[in-house]
Length: 306
Image (tube, rainbow, N blue to C red; front, side, top):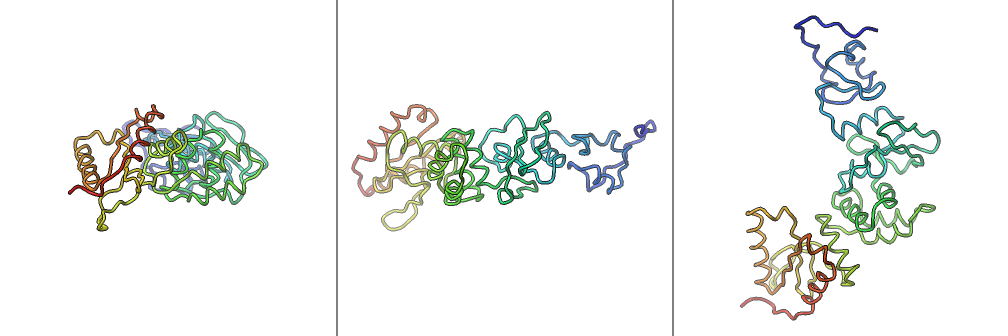
């Protein structure tokens, strides 16, 4: 069939509202009154066989993933690092879109796609309109590729976003069998915590407890004075020793944030706390960092400034 012929100076037909800005199937186009000739015209472009998008829609990772999910069988789901990225976790996007289907026929490998099989019916959910492995299954799949700290970071981020809980990750790991590296996953699931605000807070906590052998600090605790008044919420804290640990990332470099941090720390010090500020450079010198915090914990404290 020949492409739609345009009269010089004639504008392309407007894109129906139902198709504007989103990927869609050929059947959706026909239902919206768009003919095959118009799909071949200037207003649309083909992403996969039977999958199209409005031409002016820019390419990005979300469009790429959504388009694949329209082109694949209906029982496919996002898998592994692709699933993690779809959840918004601090995991690097893989070069290929990773998907998984139930046991049986696996989609053929195509450029840009990495198919897997073995999806159980209770291991899939819908997130942001797309089928994806559940947070717990996603975390277990990540345990096959991520290092120890990165896996705990992913778990902490899942909990922070309300996708799961530490207990549910532990339970999922405990009931999983015949999976590679499952013993390791069970151990690391028990290190996932609530109330963690950033990946670097997780790294710092794991350095203190793992490399340094220090007791586990409280995470973002609300600290009060002797009268019950709120005085701060440090990233990590050894409350009995009145040692607060603040991780200072790049976001703290602005003048406004820098001044706010100074005022925040002075309030803690006014009430007898020692405040230790940690940067990315400190995380590269683990022994020195842990010794510094160990000495702070051992120092005696007064109750407050008179």
